[in-house]
Image (cartoon, rainbow, N blue to C red; front, side, top):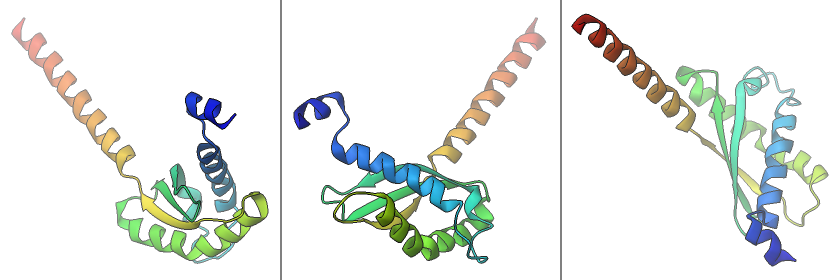
Length: 133
């Protein structure tokens, strides 16, 4: 049966990683520590990379807090990691709850910047065409 799931691209590790992502999204809303609680609603979990033994999970995130507060967000997530891991332990039915390693995911920002550059190039091209007519 495991072979069938892997052939479809949904291994047990994929399912566990997705469950961790969903649970972390919910748990970030429950952090009450006033030092970090105001920042965590601005965080979006984009992906989870789980080691095969489930010992470690890279938690990729983006933040709407802006680049100037990126360090503060990273510290807040690191500070909340113990609480988040403990709560994951109560929700997940696996033998080992992974250590959480938060990694900023800059791909969303890069994508936005590229989109803006493309829009500007298209607009400039259209202006050039109109000026040439």
